[in-house]
Length: 201
Image (cartoon, rainbow, N blue to C red; front, side):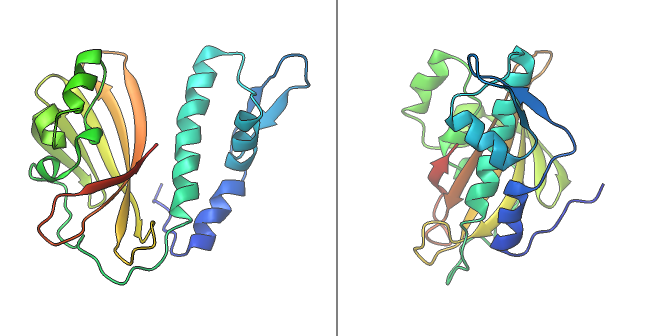
């Protein structure tokens, strides 16, 4: 299946209300169950305290909600007046320029190291990058971490005139069951500056 290209904020925002090809059932105490089949319904259900009675489904819903939140923020992007993202490319050099929050955080020790780290590379020590396409690549670190980084969108998120980039990161470990996913909005204020974190969710 070819990826869908969305060229306007209106097209991105339409995804929030678009029905999925599947649905989940969520419950809240003695209230009637709700069928969740779109980001719009999921967001409202979570805000009201609904959740799936099935643990695995709840995990899937939480991950889906992060994607929905990413789409919602992508819809807020505006045209930028200036950009320093032209040199962005998936490579071994990228983790050295990216903020440390992109690293794989599993333990309390990782959290303590994160507080002092200055880059993704300092935390994860990436040993290999496997490009999937121009927008996506898989990063392997020296401790078994596997991170799939995807460019979701570009535009001015914080209305400072400078182009920002929305990224999605899916995390896993070799020979393990751990998985997590996060989205980030980062920017670059000059052509030779490191990337700065604007938002993580």
